[in-house]
Length: 126
Image 1 (cartoon, rainbow, N blue to C red):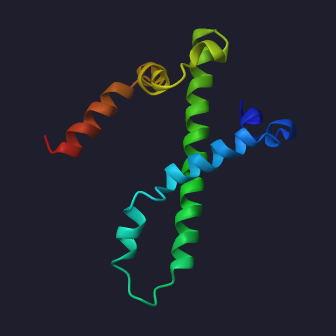
Image 2 (image 1 turned 90 degrees about the horizontal axis):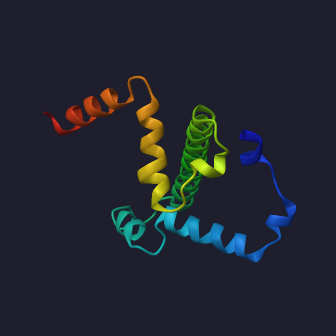
């Protein structure tokens, strides 16, 4: 699974549809055009180094996306192995991934539900 995630496919990379989807994901991920970055930058001094901030934000966003991708694929791969089914039978597209496959994987952890409940109660101060 890790090889699939990190392997570069030249025939897919030559498709303009893939590049369009990648740029769209980058814009949504960085919240470009939604006003958040403009709002944050309005609090900076006039001579603030915005190039450094843009580099930090972009690198952090990319790292976070890669970490999330590795985590999701590892969890779904483990779930497929536990259920002894092919990976395409485990993955539900769209909201099914977040609300069906991922909770099924968390429920398989030995102490997953307890840790989740404890972190929620600590977060809300109950």
